[in-house]
Length: 84
Image 1 (cartoon, rainbow, N blue to C red):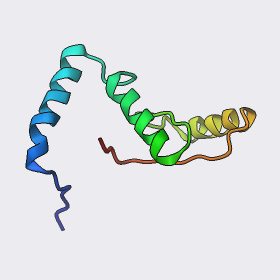
Image 2 (image 1 turned 180 degrees about the vertical axis):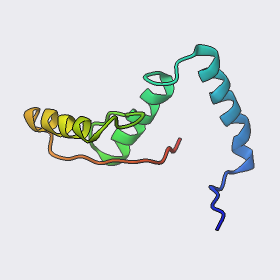
Image 3 (image 1 turned 90 degrees about the horizontal axis):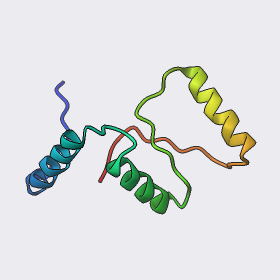
Image 4 (image 1 turned 90 degrees about the vertical axis):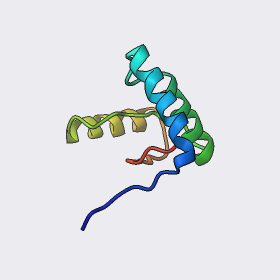
């Protein structure tokens, strides 16, 4: 079965502008759009957030959980979909 993600045609212009800015700046992560995503995610969930581009390994996740416990952070929420 073929799977697709719907996209509003009206948003195509903005999407291309965002990608053009990312490509021109050559900042694929830790840039403007990562900051916007973290801020909006934090407001929506009423929690602090940090965006990751990927997990390197199970150990990386375990390290993150240990850091959060040490910092007395109460919860972890993950998202593997991007929304603007």
